[in-house]
Length: 268
Image (cartoon, rainbow, N blue to C red):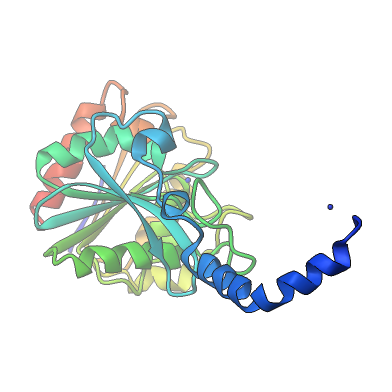
């Protein structure tokens, strides 16, 4: 067993109506077309990464809309290339823009990087039902990657995104999961599925810090031990940084990024 621990009637109105009545079928037809196509192509085009985030962070990324199986439209971007896809899941009270600094390091390293806005966040649709079904969003992005013919798919989520990777993806076929300070989904952010933890069999890597009140070590280890994967590892750094900060600009971030890269490469 390889187990290790180290988010407006005017006059003439009636006459005008009589004149327009023969045109109603045509008007209705045009309205139907506009409704089904979303209006003009320009209005329905996804924003560029720079438009969405203010900066592309040096990434040459292709934006697109992606529909989930329950009919929710997600805003997604894709950058890089290669046979291994890494899907980045953003933190709570945020959107895919918070993943870009890390994506800008992964794409040049030879990976195909996909990032997206969870339902209800960023530019993705806010559904009237299933508002907290974050796993359906992750499933749609994994399916997109598989349709593109990649050989390997890895999930990396931070905070809320990491918790969704842990709690909502046990039925997905992926080659590995990485959670950065993501343990469980807080009320109003998602739905936990503790029974699914033991069904996670692909390799699992958890990175956290020793004094992070949002993902306490005791809670993280309790969930880590319930993960069903035989190949799993937990690493805790000093301090209290959280989520993407672990692979950002902390004094140990270069070491943490190298750890994740090596971990993925040895499992691809």
